[in-house]
Image 1 (cartoon, rainbow, N blue to C red):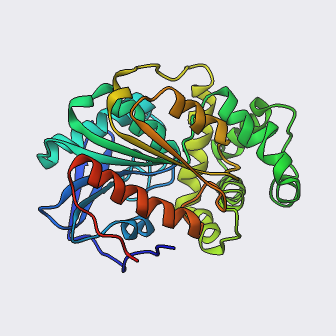
Image 2 (image 1 turned 90 degrees about the vertical axis):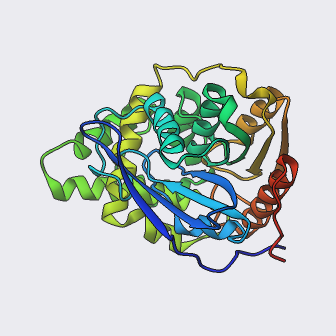
Length: 319
């Protein structure tokens, strides 16, 4: 089984104003002359994760990470105004142009996989290939799975522990419950609700318990962005169907999905694969949604290397 590459720090950071309100954070690490690779982080609301730098060989790749609007080091934190999927996709293109990159490879995690697929459809001329892990679509089916129909039935004990005061008749009730506190004036109740939302997401994201992920996502700075943006996007996206743009279908793709993904059921990745002629699907039997599961680390390192070889780059495996 392949393991993580050594820890890696960015050698360059950018703060790019994208409108009159938002400034997004960009970092670069690895080989300045290597194959350009953009990580599109999970969410909505996660922010980039230094853990993910270690999935790539720093000698072979120019590793680029961004914090989407309202996330991580981007400002203002947890801002919901002027923040929609189509705008996030435009931001990805702004970053490519800002960095002077002709074409790049994308790695999308969860929600970031959806954004990567949509970006590839909108800008196929700029995309060499796409690797998607834990493909998640924040539509009615996807949101209902996470909050009502799927994950709470897989993890009833965790729901009782973390969300027992939250109604669960339908996902609209859940979102209304959280929206009341997250958008209220009581900062203590706001943070409590944010940490409750974040703890639920963290605890169902891995097949094997991972306290490091729970600690990261429930940190107040992280939790408030994860909860406010997640709640806002979920409320809006149920009425806005995902684009059916087919321009991405000839782009090389690798889809990696945990058999026991409780955030996004395997059927979503399988359907994506069936409708994407240029894709391969790898089902990881000992993994959930998060890259923190060791089997997912192994699968992603292999898939990233395979995609680099497929599109003409070179990647040595960290065996």
